[in-house]
Image 1 (cartoon, protein in one colour):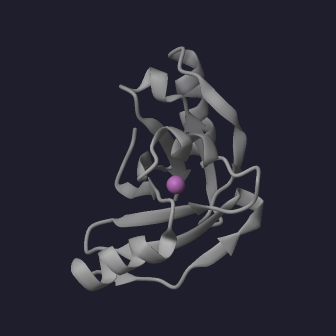
Image 2: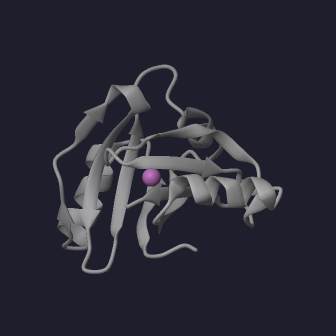
Length: 132
Ligand code: CO
C-alpha cells in the first residue's frame, strides 16, 4: 500500500542550529524557515536526492511537538511520512486492522491530505500517510 518515503520529520528545539548543521556541516540543500501557525510549527525542508528531511521547531503554546521535545530535549525523529495513492482507502485499512488513527484526514504541511497513525501501533514510530 505505501509507496515512497516522503519525508523524515525531526523535531528540533532550535531551528537555526539545525539548519546550520544540515546546510553548513552536511552540505545539504535547506530551505528558509517557513512558519505554519495552523500546524503549530516552523519548518525547513532539507531536500535530498531520494527524500526529504523536515526540521520542525515548535510555534506557539499549543504546538503538537512541544510534549515530544519535553521528553527529547535535544530533539529527535518525530515521524516518518509514507506516500499513499488513496488516503481514504488507507484510513479504512488502518481502522480495519485495528490501528489507532489520530484525528481525521486533514491538510498537511505540503497542502495534501494526510492522516497520522499512533506510534504504539507501529513499533514506537508515529506514522504519517500522505496522499500524493
Ligand atoms: Co510530516
